[in-house]
Length: 75
View 1 (spheres, rainbow, N blue to C red):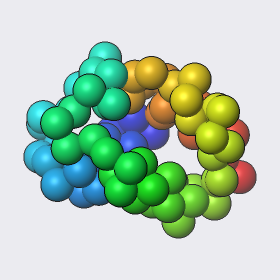
View 2: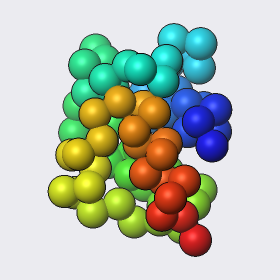
View 3: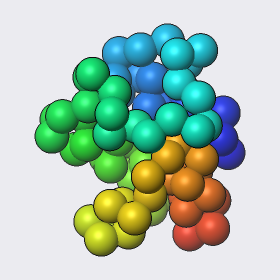
């Protein structure tokens, strides 16, 4: 799950997957903005059939936390 989410985020942020680490606080990426947020949310929905509520997304600080959330809530 983690590697899949890293690939998905890399595509949304136009970064190389190697540049994204599980301990990174993804909101601190230079590329992170409202469009990146919408892209990641939409990509998670497309890939996993999961709509992440705003409150839940805000509680995920790191890439690993987001991957754990998706893994535990996906259909």
